[in-house]
Amino acid sequence: MDDVGFVAAQQTTKILFVADLACPWCRIALHTLEPLLARLGLALHWHPFLLNPNLPQDGVPRALYLERACGSSETAHRVQARIQERGRALGLAFAFERIERQPNTTLAHALVLAAPYEHRFALARRLFAAFFEDGADLGDPRTLLSLARASGMTIEAARGALEDEAWARVHSAHREAERIGIDGVPALVLPGVGMLAGAQPPEVFEGFLELAVLFAGRGGTR
Image (cartoon, rainbow, N blue to C red; front, side, top):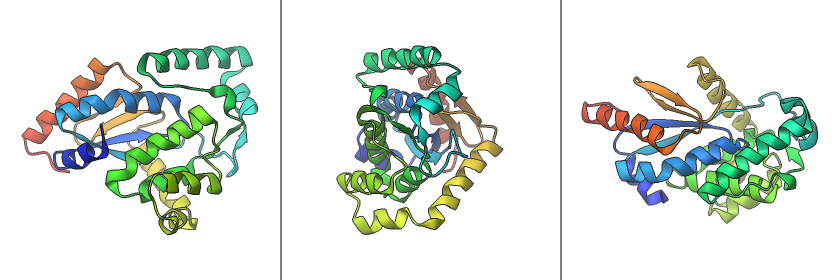
């Protein structure tokens, strides 16, 4: 779905896409959702979630992170191989071997939130690709500024997005997601209706999105 489609669909109802930019399943979910959203005339709204909110601002070595998260390098390899297989089926590459640091994604989220609505998901896709295909450090402000410029943001807007208040804004959004019961991502939230967690197959996502269509038809508000 291109950004023009997102803008046109914005007039129907509001669906939150709760995600972290260092989450491979979030990238897979977004890719799966886009053609369904275009067909149904629905929009997504980016809502930050931090899988690792207590990571140092400059992140940690990826190998150390995987060892702690998965328990062993063998388990990590199996998990990553499963993600790569799912990605290949969708035309998405995951070059995990290029990732040297597990980033704190707070500033990356702030950058997405600061982008104009019609450009947010294009920027999110660029950040996903930069991390999972090129191993870019999404916690490095210089890297983020470069990616923002490549996505069409002005350097002034990008720098403004990375200022101190950005940290509080993103962590507030993260806590809001936790308050409604989200403890992992991806998740779709239709306020007042329900929530769907996980990188689901297209038919499962489609069923949930059809609820949004019904909700909009009954006068649901954004």
